[in-house]
Image (tube, rainbow, N blue to C red):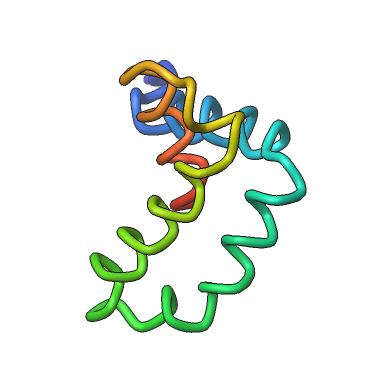
Length: 77
């Protein structure tokens, strides 16, 4: 019996679409923290640092909660 697409697949797809729309500055911020991100124990701290840096950008600073949540998933992927 075939199953329909899962909600997980849908959220990854939405995050992938947003990832394509990340600015060059956002990508550079993420790249600068990539090594620390790979260490799972330091992820909460790394995420806070990425958030602080990204929040300073014009693109991110004007987002509502729903837009930010989508962008956050893109950062994680």
